[in-house]
Image (cartoon, rainbow, N blue to C red; front, side, top):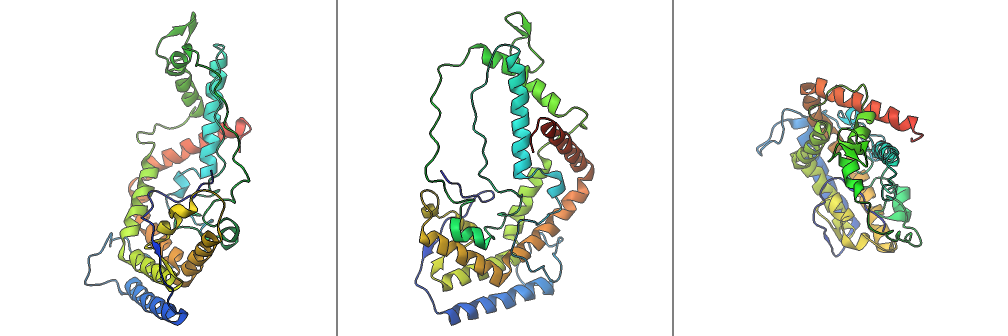
Length: 316
């Protein structure tokens, strides 16, 4: 099954609508763009301000390609590919430990269908060439899904004991503290600093994404994007609503999906949605990084050590 990749929870999908004239679409988009510019440069307003202490630069960068964007929290987060390497390394260490007990772990396919970089789809799709062939998918779907592996029978009853360390020995062989999973975790973090909250960077990143989405500047540029899409006959409230359209989830990529996806990107370019959203979220993240510098640096060092172990096993 092909995957549509988007961060966190998507908004509900929209409904196709009757197209308005290009002149009307441009006029409406220009009107909202003026409102965005006024909001970005004014600093005051009659409405409520979301996270006003973290205002973005007066002129947000003009951006479309999000694949190389770097947010302030990114140095403390693994990329999707790095996360897969670390997961594979951990699994290899677990399997090595199980073999000492004459056990094997169930096969687990390696997932390679996600984006290569952390932010390339944070604000929706931005690659026109990929959208022209794959729509909202990370890659064009294969001609046929690989066959599912047939079950090989019931698992060895000793497997859980050895994995978890439920008992101190199995068949008179001492089990490592915490089982093979505990041993693998220790081997992955030899020399790493103590980390009390290993998910701090991920949580701050999720929070900044949610906060930025509620910021009036991002809402204004999102409305401009939605109005641009409506001018082409598509009614979606947000870019993530378009990506979440159930019609684009499975099966072959349709001409409709490709048309919607390429129009989505064109409207992002017209409204500078990526530049505005990135500027707002970067400004929101900076205070959190400053307030948690030591903890985040410890997480970053731990990530480096885990990647070093993965590289030592031939991964990455």
